Length: 392
Image 1: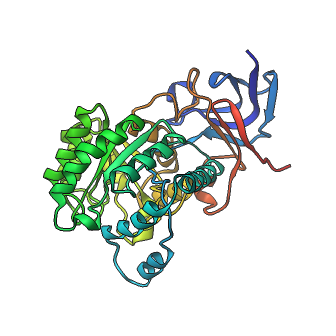
Image 2: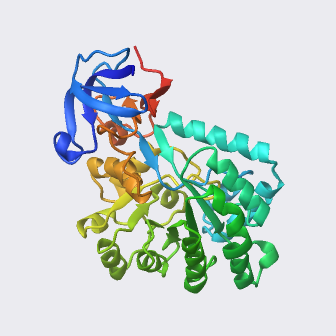
């Protein structure tokens, strides 16, 4: 089998402490050897291969793992964002605006839009991601959204319980029955996960439990949107049902932190959402110090976080959430993998999928040090070079 070697790496972040220095498993003056779609080994700089990429002393990190995105949608909500910046508060009801546009779009239109966003994410160094439905809110539109998402990733999440659509206004329980019955059956063939927006203005604890239990009975893993707009039952419910992740976690009571720390549920922080909605930033420091497993994700969506920049999210996490650059990078790579219950991505270790990003920088700290600067110079996904724009 032919080998691809990323050589002359000044600083390699393996994501595995046993392979190098510190929590990031740092290896200096290294070469990353790739065979097929897997990492074959880590050697000293100067290793030979059938194909070579000269990193020129740059830093190489694992590809980002974005464990929370909503890439399948149509329409634009820039006016809503502008109004929010002028002082109007964020409300979950804005989801319905995107629902109208998404229902009206054809399958080909949705596919083209989603693929464009996926390409943008690759340019930002995101080599694996989760994609949710949730802007169809009717059986056929949700099925179509899950099908398009499945063309982008094997981590598709069915989120029919994203909001109560306007035609079910005042009849949320009836809509829940549709989600956990006919809609779930239509979307299940494309999905690995089921999610629910457990929040005031969306679904209460009993409704959320009904959706999640139906998904679990259908063989899907569990994820929960919760504690975004205020203190609530979302995190507690996620832990109780053994969900892989509780996402947002903007408002965490002491008992929420304790429950997360005693569980395998990952707290996924979405700092770009708090930036966009003017919500307070949660204290990741508090969660980490308590022993909570954490991830960072972009939450790319049209209403509250229209970004595919994981570097931006990392910078916010360090500046405003109390994380160190090392913790934030781990949360955006290995943490995202944990939130998706995967061990094949988020690390550059022998046997892992060969997803690597060469930064136009000597150190990962530049992701925070140089906010807003495009630092991704090359991207390798599953052993294939998909972006190579290293500066001379």
